[in-house]
Amino acid sequence: MAFEIVELKKETFTGNKVEIPEFDPQKGFGPMSEIKAAAYTNFATNEKDYVGINASLDGLQYYIVASVNSESGDTTFDIPEGKYAKFVTSETDRPALDGFIGASYGEVSQSDTVGIAGSFNLEDLREVDFTLYIPVVSK
Image (tube, rainbow, N blue to C red; front, side, top):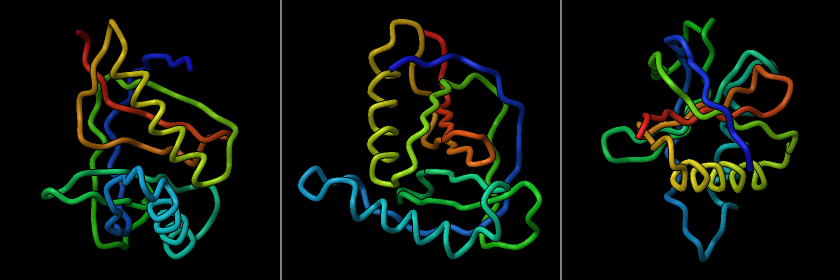
């Protein structure tokens, strides 16, 4: 699984968050994927202006469905300017996407050149294909 390092500018997103469970290998991605899919269905008003943000906030895991252009929602999240590992897939099945995210983290953690630099990631649903950005720092 290949990735490229890109620079992102700071973006502020406003949207709604739902708590998601920590990954449980016994249950697989099913429970988390169901919550994420329902959140997107409930909060996104169209197919392409939204992002999903997986974030650890106050010790809990959340999935935030948000937009740059939104003025409503229960939370605001800043994606800081910096280096990100960019992964792209044409997969659309939610459990498969969550598996892709897990595998992407595995790739970054095994990298000789970069390490994980944050407790969030950005699922950019504004792209043609599913695009994941993981914050990284040079080793």
